[in-house]
Length: 319
Image (cartoon, rainbow, N blue to C red):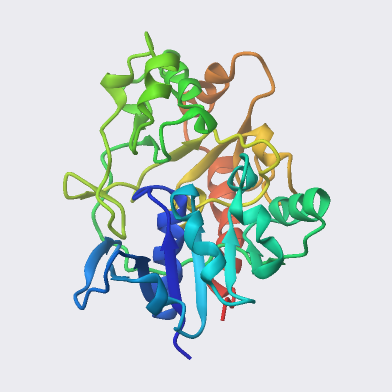
């Protein structure tokens, strides 16, 4: 059975894009975008996968359709899809806004959620049942190269990622080599309003190419990296995984997460399979204390225990 994935959103970086790539690679799916005309050539999507632009009237005739992500720019096409088409809801923010077509047409689709908190949110706020399936993870070939960065952040630079906390941590990290280097696409509005005076330009390396494994300047970004710091906080969401978490675990990096994310579920446990911060008013200092400390037996235990998390994502059966 061939699965036909449909990506219906503007972003070319971030979790939606990574999810679509892992799903496509793991199950050898076709990938399409809605186009003004049908093309007969494949375009590069990133992460070793290609897509084809197809007119909506032709796209909806295909079997086994699954919409991997959608934003407001593609709402006009939603009502054209057949009853029972599968659609993935990644987090509650996708259901915000007036005249939200996902909410309006919710009963038409078979909804898949990728975290239990999102499944519960749908049930509580919209009385809508959904199928929970954890993020699929494609076991790509790792390189033998070593990262030159002991501590990194690899998520978007944005309000919900709280990159300001990471930059504040750098003020307390003693060893210049251990300071957290920041990679990812930036929300310029967030940078302007929240990151002034925090040396953002000094630590931000820009976007990284969409490769598996992740590379920067042609070198592996995560191999032999000690810490991946992710300060995600999303209202009504949390507790589960994101691809930044899974990539860190896959490459033997210890995660440093915010308690506002961790406490939404039972998966992540402080100093068992990750480090958790956010217990004081000075989160940056909490982060720095973990990074300043020499790697010890507790660190090795966290790495070992975190491997149990990724196993479910490797073994999950989406189709």
